[in-house]
Image (cartoon, helix red, strand yellow):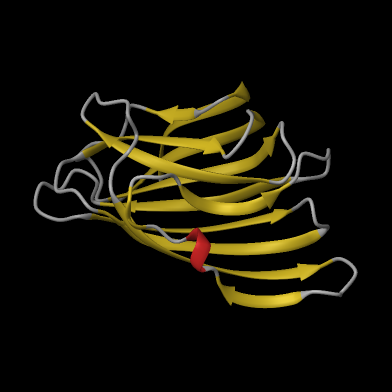
Length: 176
């Protein structure tokens, strides 16, 4: 891994990575570390854009599943979560949900983006994220899919579904 950039959130509505994503690498990894929301019980997600565009509304098709286990041992589940999928839509893809804003709550994970500079193929991604959330449970969430464009992706935006990202760090790596 080659570290390209580090972005720190501090009461940020969005966390935008607007440089460093180019044809240098065929895979980029975004490590999001201790992302802490200002608002309780939110989702943390991403969207992409091309060139110098800032609409962050690229069409995606995705899938999502999760494993959860409660602190009180009253819930243990592995489930496909259809309401977190996108079917040729332009919304933000959920990476993890039920993120709490308590002092001991946050989420962390890795988003892999493959060959974002390709002008021939759509752009595939996979992610894995974990949290200790507002329901006093551990979650391990998986999202995957593709951004349905053959135009080079140059920007990625991360955000909470409501309120600001109170704190957290996103590290962008190129994979040799």
